[in-house]
Length: 233
Image (cartoon, rainbow, N blue to C red):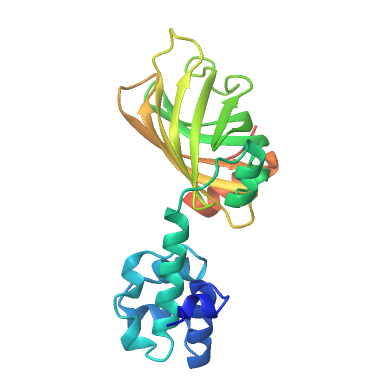
């Protein structure tokens, strides 16, 4: 018997989107019918489906369920198949990684100095090292002469959207270090996130951060994403 996925060149995401639009449903309505949240369903239409998306697919799309499931299973088999080790350049092309993440970024951090909340700016440099994004500040933050320091971070880039990793000082005498979780904006021009770690004030602190390609965008992104009004120097 012919595999429905192999006889139909479209992937499961395209088939799922086509089935939904044929019914005239919104993504919200479809998510409700599948009894999953809207974000989970949107991820499926963008090619990042999790198994829970398909638990009730036969009840919601009885005519299309077989082809959608077959396409999903085919992609899972392809992902699990042994792959030839690619070069650094090929890895980014095949994985669809956003090359624009490398280069210069501007950062705005929510942190503390002597128990007072402050917002610091920094200029960052980012470059790929195999599948990880290496990030470092060019100089300590000028707004934080006591608590600022040089640091470097190593971040995994997951699903072309999420950045997850750690940062540590380049000076071994500095104790500050921690973890970072960021989300790339769909425009590719900004990143919002949260850091957790130790700093000048405490062994356990946390705060928000935003990165932007243009320094002038930092305050706007911080306001949009976290509601903080920040006046840049």
